Length: 226
Ligand code: ADP
Ligand code: ADP
Image 1 (spheres, helix red, strand yellow):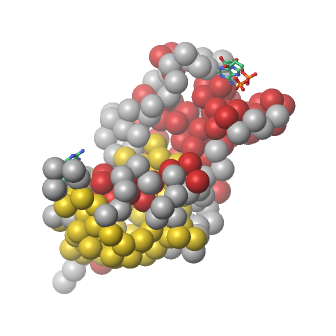
Image 2 (cartoon, protein in one colour):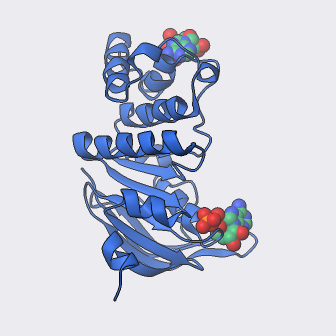
């Protein structure tokens, strides 16, 4: 398990936009955490800064008490699941899931074992030989989650995990995310512009505005202030 400690982080794009502005945030081990706010408030940039996909112009990011600010994305112990899932279209589900292990030259037998096991916990066991184009949106998302987990990441970063799914699949995805949270005790940070999603899923919520956190607390604290 791994907590996240963000200290004085600013992220500035080359055009001068300060998308994250001197932000402090601590996310606990095993927490399911929502970054909530209107379009353009800096949620995705913050997620990408944690992942190492955008450099922090100031401040530091620590994961599991290790300063990762200058580390490459692959060295941070995090996995990011993108809105479009970014599966490899020419690979099967099993190959997609095993991909992070293959690039690390893990033995083929071990790759198959991890792929089967991870696929099982995400109800993809019957779909291992299919290609992404033969899966529903919800199944594609679960394959992307399985790939992230197979990589051994302790921190999952999810960009709008429910927004591309219809109402029924959204409910199903919530169940899977909670199950993963429960079974694997992953630290999960997800971005959403949807209050109902944050309320239904998150242990705690940070409400962002203009690159800063305006409110922070449990769903009850954030939405039911007297
Ligand atoms: P959100 O995820 O909350 O919608 P973003 O993090 O995408 O917000 O964007 C925050 C701010 O940074 C916005 O003003 C947006 O226009 C700007 N921005 C996002 N990506 C880039 C980029 N690649 N180059 C320049 N500005 C960007
Ligand atoms: P390397 O990964 O070092 O190239 P491999 O023997 O793992 O060595 O793979 C050789 C080739 O076979 C790869 O370049 C790829 O085209 C194909 N391949 C092997 N395993 C996979 C896999 N799990 N998914 C997709 N393609 C694969």
